[in-house]
Every structure is written in structure tokens, then in C-alpha cells.
Amino acid sequence: MHRVESLKIDSGCIRQVAQTLMENQVSGKILYVSDPVVDSLYGALVKNQIRDIGRLKEEYVDCNTINYAMSIAERVIATDVNCIVGMGGGKVLDVCKYASYISKVPFLSIPTTAANDGLASPVAVLKRQDDKPKSLGCKMASMILIDIEVIANGPKQLIKAGIGDTISNYMALKDWELACRRGQDIMNGYAYLMSRSSLDALMKTQFDCITPEFVEVLVNSLVLSGIAMDFAGSSRPVSGSEHLFSHALDYYSKKKNLHGIQTALGTVAVLRLIGEDTKSVVEYLKRFEVDVNPNHLGIDEDTFIECFQKATLMRTNRYTYLHEIDLCTDRLRNVYNWLTVEL
Ligand SMILES: [Zn+2]
Image (cartoon, rainbow, N blue to C red):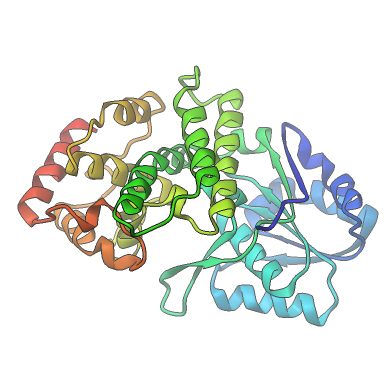
């Protein structure tokens, strides 16, 4: 397990970059990595703090391929960079996470969105040469600063995706329990508890719209999910059949949707397929106006059916309910139609 040395979740903590780096004995050459949009909003604030304590180098990310992350790692190694400071959404942070893992330098992560549990996780999702995404095991960022105000001011749809990714723990835990009952996996009680607590904190919140206070609850949940992965040494506690379906959509669907939106749709669909109650999950999604109706997402019936039928092929070592239930076309068509009416 790789411990995060410094984790701060608060409004305004984007102003604590210099302080955090100093607390962790970082000085010298520091590589700042961001994308042009985020940089135009918060770049000056962060770069000025880096200049206060070290020598600033800059990199602006425009792609998220494995190749590109490796090229940053190479530059870090070749030019003796002491630390990577990455600020942005999942793409920027995953590039930095992997570059830091390869180059073995510390990484200060400043997420500006809360769209998925990669916020604080030991996994980076990067693109292969054929443009398909690949999940790569690496390590948690060594320092994480999550400014609630920054995230709450970002696009609402990304926050809704973060809700969806956390809700999918509901299905992922059911799948994990099943896999253990079938002797296909081993339970890790600590990781299970973390994932469950992440889900419960979100499901039991008294808020019913997206306010900064609610965003704080969501961020705490996403971080707990990330720690659950770190405890388990894999994404198992937060990723089951609903994630296999989402991975299949990433491969086979022409229409691209946010990861957390797809996993939330997957959660409701699998619950329906296995005959479990969908009410609490569906009501929760509606309460925060998280629209996962496949029609509205541009996922047609054929794509939906194909992705469910191919889902188990997406990850051969992950046993889920999809390995046991009937996934014939007629059944999936019924579920699709039910979803388009109920969601
Ligand atoms: Zn996820």
C-alpha cells in the first residue's frame, strides 16, 4: 500500500500549494502540469506559489496516451525534476499519476473536478495507440489538495458523474460478495468497509441538490473509494458488473458519455437484470437530476445489448453476476425498454 503523505480537503486549500510542498520537503525543480482551460482559471495562483519555493517548469497536456505520460516521465528523469504538480481533471491527473509512478518523483495532485473516484486512487486510465482506454495500476498521489470551492464552481455534469461513480459501489459490492461465495475472489474486510462507507455517506446525505456542502460529502466519498482500492490492491471494491458494462460502452459505443454516468446506468440495469430492487438507487439519481436514461445518453438498443453481451470479456479476472445470468437478446431488450420508461 502506498500512503498519501498529505491530504487536504477544504474550500480555499488551493492557496496551500507552497505550504504543502514545504511540509513535504520539496524544493528545486518542480514541473507544473495542467491543461490550457484550467490553467487560465487557476494557473497563476498555483504557479506563483511554486515560484516562491522552487524553479518552475511548465507542461500543458493535450492528450492522455500512455506514450505521452511516458514522455513526461522521461523528461522528469532526464532533467532532474524533483516533484510534479498536476492540476486539472482526470486526464491531466492520470498522466501525472503515471509519470510520477514511472519516474519515482513525488506528485502533488490538485483535482478541479470530482467526476470519478480516480480523484485519489492508485489507478491511471490512459489511452493505448489504438485510442482505446486502459486501466494501469500505479500509486496514489503523494500529496492531494482538493479545493471544494473550485470543484463546486466547475461543470455540474461532472459532479453528477461523480455521484454516479460512487453509486456504482452498490453493485460492485454485491458482485464482490458473489465472487467470494463462488470461490472466485477473496474478501478484504477493510476495503469492503471503506467502499460501503463511501456509498453510505453519499446515500444518507440530507442534501437534495448540488451545493458546496454536498460537494464536500461527494468528495469525501470519492476519496474513500480511492482508499478502498488502495487497501484491496485492485479496483474490486468499487468496480463490478456495472463497470464491465461501462468499459464495453467505451469500446463499442459510438456515443461517448462520462464514466460515472455509464456506471450508474450499468448499476440500475444489472439490478433489474438480477431481479433486485432498483428503487433506492433510481430515486437517489433523480433527486440529484442525474439523467441515465439510455435514450437521452444516445445509447441505442443494439449497442446496449451488444455491450452487456460482451461485458464479461472486458476483464477476464473479474467474476460478477453477469457470469451467471441469462443475457439473451430478448431479456436485454426488455430491460432496455424498462430503463427508457423508468429513468
Ligand atoms: Zn469508476
